[in-house]
Image (tube, rainbow, N blue to C red; front, side):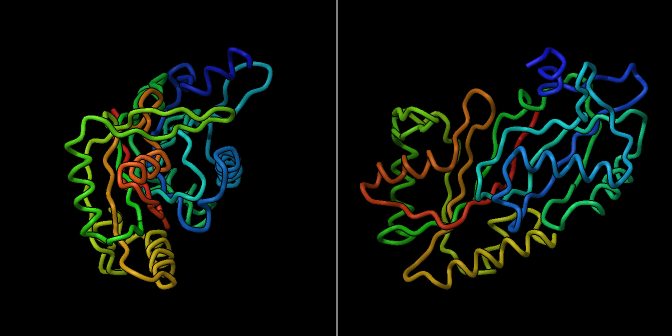
Length: 266
């Protein structure tokens, strides 16, 4: 990888002081939750071209549009808090750029809000924590799950499998768990504890999918909220947490749906 491309992966050029960098939060909804990180990047690049947004480009032999995303979201997970830095070749209004981009994007992939950020401020390094909502099924229902989470919170160690391409190793995820809460799932009555942007059309589609998934299940379902570390160094993925929870309970925990509710960025 060339030096120019490496720089574009982590930071955005300041375009000689003529442009600006906007950090947008965006929604990745139900119909696009299986789109890969790379395909999502290409989708935004095409939308920017269609909307005639004055995007800046990296320097070098093979220039790339100045779009840098935070940590990749695992396939199958919806999110209302993904982050992206957009480098522009000229000064621009945050809301005008957002409206243009959203007109060119699908309903389930929409910018929600933005703010100016300094050039060369790495978005990957800025992410440090966040929250997941999970729809889970466990033997014994919500009451047993609450007891288990209380015990887990008081435990010194929670072991889980961390899987990479070629290896599986045991890691202690307890230091990465910052908060645990659980409620009985009650269909759309639970939307306010699952989502933050409850009125957004993309949220309604995800909420409908959760309710539909619950209809085919027998027994009680629970909404589990996990506050955890995120980022390049200590990143607790939901699959690691479910594996650790299953080990801790001594039984399989079925996870039907996962939604990324919040991501904290310095």
